[in-house]
Length: 267
Image (cartoon, rainbow, N blue to C red):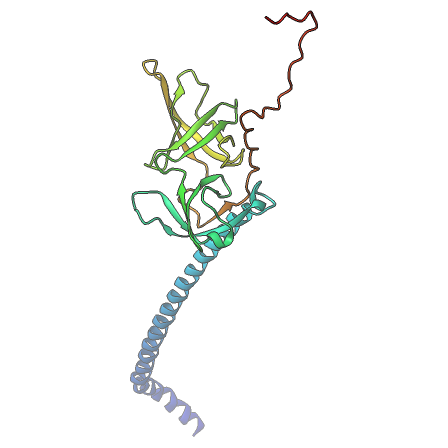
């Protein structure tokens, strides 16, 4: 009987497989669609997490950039950082045709009109209007915004004036014979009493000299991030005031002694 049972099992095995095939196929189809649905959900979750991680990465990059920018304006790296107050840009000026910034520091923080505004790379502009808690700064590239400058290469003095267009600076009234070359660096000369001497202003980008004209056409690019950064520093240190002029008739200059000799007879 054992041999007969084994023989019958061999003969019945294909029938058992044929009978179980539909159920196995349905089970595999169910597993397939279940796996597809699970994979689609996992894919969607991974895409969502990827977007979140991308946003976090961009925030981290922005924070790292701002941290470096703030570190460059720290007292250890900036020449005038100890005399200033850090300010954040709130918005651009009311007039879209002017180059001005609204900052979050005002009279309550010691900000006054005329104070220079700088960043880690150089001069950004100048405070031109002050409120109690905010102030307005006019950018270096605003039309007719002038800064006394000096060339670091040869000490040549000039006046840098904002062009009001394409973020450039003009250096007018420089004779054709002036020793100015592309790449020269302009810094503040300090003779106006507003900007401390030695602040980086701009770098020369174009010099056009024509013998038919008296003055050369000089264009420079601001060294600071005039339209880039969110934080700036307002230099609040006051320069020492000049002594008042002596009143008329109170001239204390030493009197030159007369040479020895005979006194002239009075008529």
